[in-house]
Length: 453
Image (cartoon, rainbow, N blue to C red; front, side):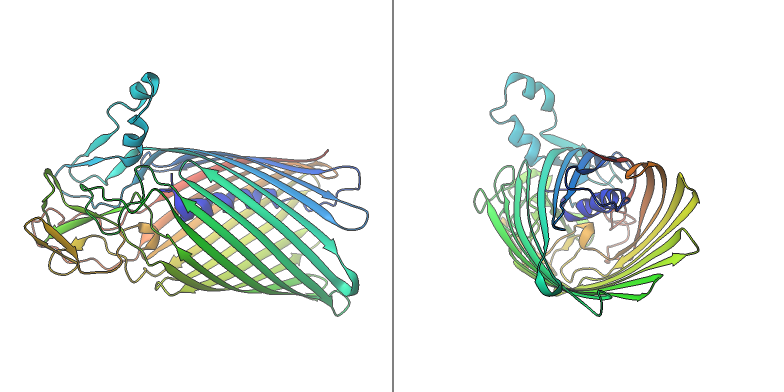
């Protein structure tokens, strides 16, 4: 189910990627270096919960080529914001995912999902769809081979599948060493194709929630990523990397389960197609998106065994989102068989130029009798497209057991802060005093084990 979409995926990738990157050993021609991990992720207020086992296999051969295989499995449950605003009156919604499961389900499934086809949100509560559950499997394969004259070729691909979404990608990169291998230039290209098959069909953009108008059973998106990088050895204790990235995607960007509240001077209005419920519209995002990113990383040795890893990333796109990320990790070797890695990450972004906490009549939409007409081409209340800042604090404990064998435990805590300006509502209206941004806090714990096989 696409409700989790990219932000959750990024947080899960941040967690597992940090864990699996702990050991940088070289495997021989007859064995594999195995990095395994289990991540348990939990959002506050009984929102998304995830369990994610990860297995990474790497084998280095005598000709200096290497093969890397990665398998990730996600099991997700919980509640996810449906996009509507909290109000001081009760609201009732129908879950597209639960309704789709009930249609044609056997008796056991009918009992499991009975009562989850619709749900009522109490006054003042954030509208959460509690029927959210999904599994995702991701397989990726990479191959690296040194060529003549200091060149290295990297080729790879990935396939990801979940209940209503599949993704396939291929990638390639070429790197060249200069200056006695003190300088490395690299150029990489990634091509990705995504297919969305939402439960209940692809909603027509900005159609009414009650109508359930669809634009087909599936839709697609294509992504092209280009990366240019340079890595420089400054001295024997300092390594610097700089990347410049371009990304262009075209096709279906919407979250098919996200809606927007329609309000008149801050008051909910009755849906002309369903007099028993209030009016909501399905979200709509532009069909194209271009991104530019800059990344700067420094790894500096401190003393005999410690190291600082600090990175900064800037991203800007034509949706109006500009983000800054600062990431800092300190590797502190207490003994030969114990180290600590405190971690801090700060993130901030501006809102997309079409992000709205709700749609206002006369400004964003007109309602005349049974005719509902959007006055905007794109609109989304998704908090992932809003303005916010976020802090991540964490600590990893690593226990090297013997050569190329290690156990580790990492704890992380993530907290968002609202950075949006409030949209005006009338005093005493249904939306007066209600939060216009769904802040998120989450924590995760991950256990890892690396060994030779």
